[in-house]
Length: 142
Image (tube, rainbow, N blue to C red; front, side, top):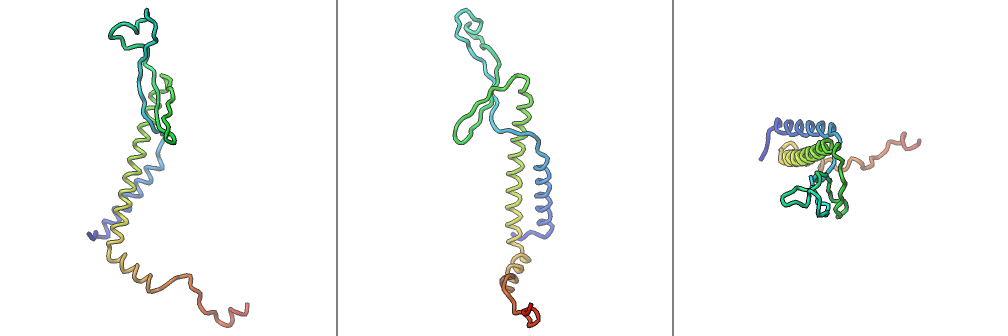
């Protein structure tokens, strides 16, 4: 499963491109926007007629926060903005997913590359870089 160096560079380039796209994410919010029509319960109202849709539409945004469902009513003039924010959230999630997948492939490729394996061996042979070395007599007097 060894990929040439160009594969590594391609994966690194894709990771960098995804990070740039993530830095450009606009306002976002999770949840589901629902359009609802309601019946008021008055017998003489138009919504009580058979086949009537009811009053509305009214919009609500629902999402889960700490295991509980939270619903916010969205005013009619905020519906398009909310739709854009929801779409931006979906785009954000897709970018993050792709970044994680690409990074995972890059890490696997680096581990499978002979140069990476020989580098790891060389590091083992060198030992710890933090080990103390013997000081010369001139340095130890200071």
